Length: 201
Image 1 (spheres, rainbow, N blue to C red):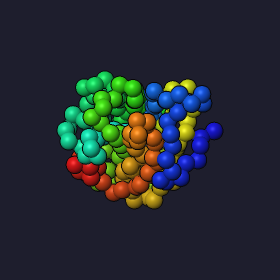
Image 2: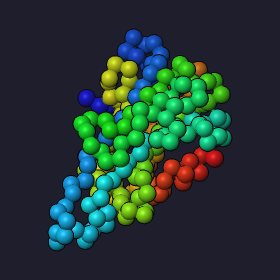
Image 3: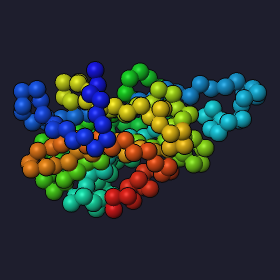
Image 4: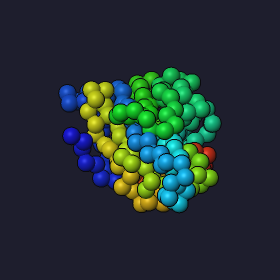
């Protein structure tokens, strides 16, 4: 069962035995768009036209609360951070497949001391150009689990306000030498990762 975290509720990243949690995984999943028959009555009638919807998960690694280098964005175009602490397992363009369609693994013990916050975001690729939003995506979710596979926060993206095209999922940050997780769940109309990143520069 997922812990039902509220926005702004801070969570210590600790194991059941009280030791510090070393690794987490953020998973993004959604179902492929059901393709309509070519020339059908509904074809092209609604925004998106039945074309694939490509959701993307990314991480911003902040120094003193700011995104200071493009290399500190881990996403489908930069799969592994220079430190090796954050690894994106690859892009999924359609949502095809069971469970998590995109995964990002974070080794908190390997995050260099100069980074004080990791921000996790999700957006629909080229949402404006394709006329797409989360209300058109079936069974979309983003979640975070510990190194034992225990899920401790999940947001259902398909239940978000229909016109949202991106979401700031949450942040892991250092506080008095420990890592904490802050669920945010803020939907936005940003059209891509560059617009999301600009919020932290």
